[in-house]
Length: 76
Image (cartoon, rainbow, N blue to C red; front, top):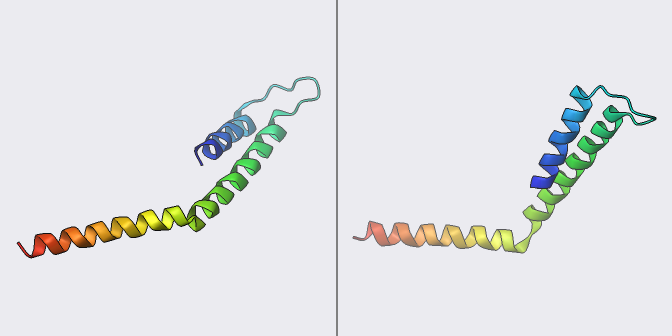
């Protein structure tokens, strides 16, 4: 996810601020391509994380610890 954010920021900077036109290389085209690829990567990694069983297990485990702690502290 972090690499997608970095690529999106780099692409946005290249798209907006770089005006140098080298021999046949258009930096705004590279920048917009980076933004599109980064956005796709971010969406795919977000979906993969949301559907990961480890992610849901860690959320469930954390919720169980909070419930247990609240029950322990409420009986004291």
